[in-house]
Image (cartoon, rainbow, N blue to C red; front, side, top):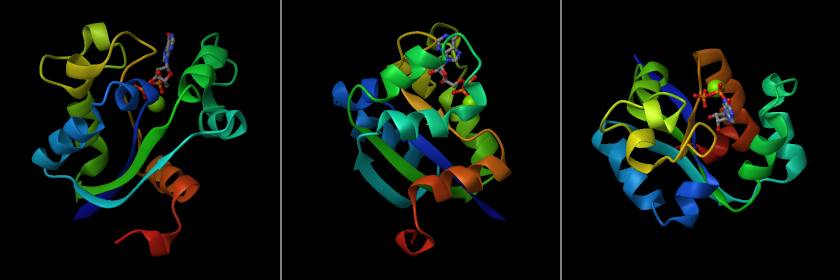
Length: 138
Ligand code: IDP
Ligand code: MG
């Protein structure tokens, strides 16, 4: 059964001109792009998106990073999209991400790690609705 997940190509990826390469990597992994847009997150939006981390010491830095420049958000579809995207991304810390993963190839460290991916089907549905109306997904 096909599943949807949300990805964000973070400001580091977009600024480095790697958005196309990362989307191509995801398509090679069998993800279909159901919806995509380039936006600049407002601080309030970044705080809301990462609200689960608001008590963490890295929250302020994360919000600053996510709002420093434009991002590309995309709703992706394939079988087991949520776990498969997490595997394709690699570990949170780019320095520890497995060889050939998006974070290993394009990330820098534990904060500037190139890409976001939803961590559960429930959060994927919420995160997709955060950025897309159902009519924008094809
Ligand atoms: P994930 O993106 O692999 O799901 P989370 O733990 O959900 O990782 O953290 C969300 C984002 O917050 C990470 O992708 C990264 O950009 C940032 N982050 C996580 N842990 C740290 C940290 O210890 N220091 C700085 N930034 C962090
Ligand atoms: Mg997470």
